[in-house]
Length: 263
Image (tube, one colour):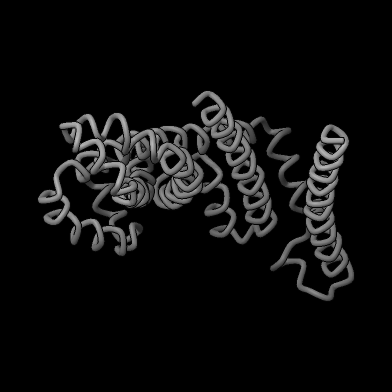
């Protein structure tokens, strides 16, 4: 009886997952079809809004010229570096701030101000300091994702069950032991979930950086297309960016499942 009910429950889960994926596919296909129809029948200005067919032809031209994967690789590499740095540094800084409440009170206003500051405004300063190269792009992405990581992880740390902390203190546990054996393990899901936010924020930062200084990458393609009024290249770059963003998200979700399964 129990096995039958369990199998039925799993079947419903699989069916629900199937319908979710089908709806997602239908939405994408419908959007592309409507966009192509409106453009082909001159209901919208095809010069301004391009069309899926023109955008995909532009992407294929980049592939034939041998430039497509180079631009993708440059953006992915920059995103990976800034994503890794933001995750590691953000977690370490959050641990330090949790360990020292005095330091957190001193730093907190600065974190808030820096987080609210449009990072693109710092672009000229970053370029002057680090040069018009990949370093500036990585620093730009790091500034965008680092503060968010610190805030998310720190808020998770201070939300740790106070009763459990009191219990460990009753056994004369040091603050370091509480951190190692309770706070970090108890907020493992917070740290892992921050990966999802980091990858998107890092990608945003990289694209912003490529708008300013890069001569390669997806951001460069979009920016160059807008400068020469090649809207097909702009929309082609956006489509490539969406695909890259989705692939990165899927990879992070897979890593998250692996890490959670092993802990």
